Image 1 (cartoon, rainbow, N blue to C red):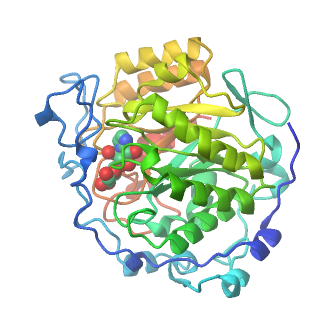
Image 2 (image 1 turned 180 degrees about the vertical axis):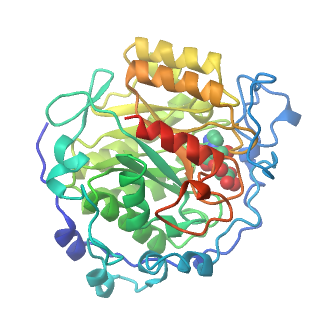
Length: 434
Ligand code: IDC
């Protein structure tokens, strides 16, 4: 594996077009949540139990769910009353403006000077010395058998938070947010969820330039903080990644070209193939998108989603891709997915498949409902056993169980425990065990 130099902020300042976007740029999309994403698991659930989407395999075991946070009913994937206002973003201490209100020149070059190591002007936090950061220690990652390994060939494990969709919640793509996740939550990786089809998604009406800018900001902040960053092409209601393949190719070509010398970027080329999408169609898509990334970055780690919302991992184990440095994703929601999906993971891991849990929740598969921490503990034990990396859904203050901030919390960093949801308290404790 070639060794690459991490280019830090001074260079990124020059090459990136880092104009932030305002939360108000993205209007509420009335269609969000009413998409075909709701039609899922046709082979495993009766239709009337699919309203919230993504449930499958197993119903939550009765009596095992702790109750969810107050007032968060199981409302399914609806998106009302959740978009933070620009004011909300802006009301956070001296930080939001850097990401959320800087605007919007087409090339962003004139904003580059604002994009400093500490956009808030704060003194870098203890431990932010780059020589000591996680990425400085571990460098370029690779896949060795079923393991994720670092630049020395030692096994390494990534863990952290996924943003919610960055179109909904751009304010959390912020240096101070990620700094808090690194220093207070003890995480080493952040995932940037770029929806393709929902809510002014990249391929359905969103401003591609603004969204790319936000992704680049996120990559920059993570890089500055010495964190790994997953660039997640978040397909969902579009079901088959081939639907927006041309956009994916353009997007990954541009991002991988800009960041070809960085060693902290992980490309997730399709979040959750589902519905009619087969493993063959995912393989065919991967066969076109991976070479585009490889043209620029010959050894970046690439994550590939598996069918049925990343539960049909056995199909990947039976017929893996013929590329190096690829991992396959499994997603679970602990109040929905229990023993059966865990067995699938064990089987795949025992068969030597490199697995990355790039998204999970402690609640049910709608992202809402009650948390089931008993099941979540079982999942964590299994992930520990196989040293599997894991990323929790989601970093936002939406009034849904999976959001780790309370819905009333408008701060974008430095949260107190009072400001965390039940999910946030639990997962932060889990991260701090490392
Ligand atoms: C959910 C969000 C919810 C949003 C919905 C859009 O939590 O606020 O309205 O998407 O359809 C996934 C998906 C992820 C889902 C999450 C919870 O990757 O996008 O987020 N989930 O439903 N797979 C399984 C669960």
